[in-house]
Every structure is written in structure tokens, then in C-alpha cells.
Image 1 (spheres, helix red, strand yellow):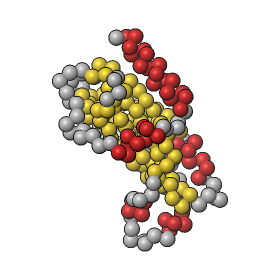
Image 2 (cartoon, rainbow, N blue to C red):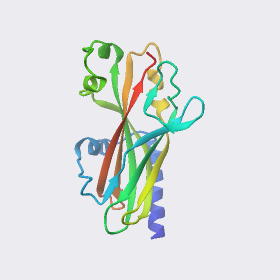
Image 3 (cartoon, rainbow, N blue to C red):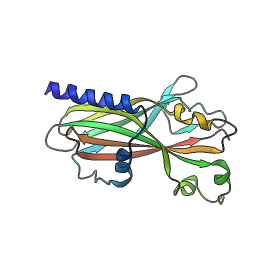
Image 4 (cartoon, rainbow, N blue to C red):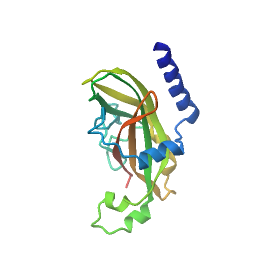
Length: 203
């Protein structure tokens, strides 16, 4: 059993190393097309939260990655934090993977939309792009009823956004979406959850 986990972990590490932060088409299609009833699933993924360092070096939850005004919360790297719980009657071993993508649209196009519309309504039909792997981890021997905190550390959001942080670029990634998927060691999909983070530009 120990050898099996070592082999699985090596496969996960190799996958991240080879793909860097790029996402394969098959993985993304799963996020877009597959619905899993987490209420009836043996495995439940809790609320997905974003954490990072403020300008003053304080580690805290990030509700809005914000460059506007005097906001302190626009870290270069994000930690993706959530709970994983076993609702079944037997122990489980899991591979957890995080996929991130961005909702990109131009400033000028957003400004032309009716002022009574909320940003979410404006962006609802904008496709998600800039797909990235934000992290993978192995959960061993999660007991029935047990819940564990998981942290996918150090996703470099600044690396993706760098090209948008210029005055010549009319595009901005208004939303960052993270999808967490739980699979068995055999590759069966057990649960999935998503969370959105608003990215507020300078002005």
C-alpha cells in the first residue's frame, strides 16, 4: 500500500511539473459539463476560500482581489483553502485537483453596458479563458465522518494577470474561478465544487 501511494504521488508531481499551470482540454471539459450531486456523494467539498498576504504582510482571507484606491488585498500568490469530508461508511483515499480560469472582457465593452446591470449579469455570457492548474494533493485514509482542512498553496495569480496590468491593454480578467475535483485513486470522480473571486482593477 505504501508503494502505491508513492507511485500515485510521483504521478501527481510529474503531472504538475510537465504541465506547469496549463490545463488539458479533457480536464476543462469535465469542469464545464459534469454535474455531481454532492449531497448524495460519499465525499463533500466545503466552501472554497482564498487567502494571501496583504500589502502590509498580513495573511488573511481575500474577499476581493482589489487594485482600486488604497486596498491592501491584491497578493501575487493565492492559497486555495477548503474542507474535505467523508460522509460514507468506509475510509477513502483521494486525489484533489484545483483548476482555475478567468473571465476576461474589455473595459470599454463593460462601460457601455446599462448602468443598472450588475457585473455578474454583464459577464454571464463571457467565456472563461486563461485556464490553469492551481494545485493537486493526495488525501490518505480519510475516515468515515472525518473532515480535513486542505490548502493548495501559492497559486501565482500575478503571473497570469501581468499582461493585463498595462495602460495599453483594454482587457481585464474580472473574475477568477476555481474548481476543486475529488477523485478516487482509480480515477472515479466523486465530488466537485467551485468558487469565484472578483478582481477589481485600478479604476
